[in-house]
Image (cartoon, rainbow, N blue to C red):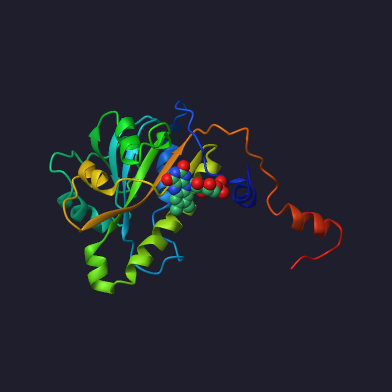
Length: 231
Ligand SMILES: Cc1cc2nc3c(=O)[nH]c(=O)nc-3n(C[C@H](O)[C@H](O)[C@H](O)COP(=O)(O)O)c2cc1C
């Protein structure tokens, strides 16, 4: 069993996906369960970010488009704002506590790549996702400064995904480059009720041999071994 400290120190963004590695559905559900906000205390406001997922290589469930409502009370609102033809089926083996739904079966690899500024990492992993914010209502209720809070929530979710992917033996990467209007077209969002703010990909990784990885906090560890204390 790997310690949390080791996972935190070794975690890196994936630079390329191998286009092969899949993860078991149980692991996928576990990773998504970890971004459910209860019992988070890092974000004091009600969850305002949900996921639109592109699932490519998860063993035991169909590839396609999925939705995760990080607040179960928002499923209906999402359903009303997304394409009417989506099926909203619970995937096999999904825990009852996880509001995850299959929207549409199909090969979404090319689609995910296209909407992510044609970055292959979005289509060649196990899954990728858009973090879809409850946008207009949040800004009207809490004021313009809530815009920053939406990004803070997205960033916190990203940190969890980075560590969960590392713990699962795969890797992930934040994707800041994506085309938001095409993402909205994929899921059926037509107005400012929902807005994609940040994307993420998770999958089997290919290392770039040109990069060197040094031990995290190596200077501090060496200094401590010599009996010194660095500021
Ligand atoms: C907000 C954010 C957006 C990012 N967007 C992209 C992206 O669009 N494409 C990409 O390949 N990597 C993206 N990355 C990954 C960064 O390139 C990566 O985090 C950086 O190179 C540092 O590497 P490390 O996470 O291994 O320390 C993004 C990371 C963050 C935090």
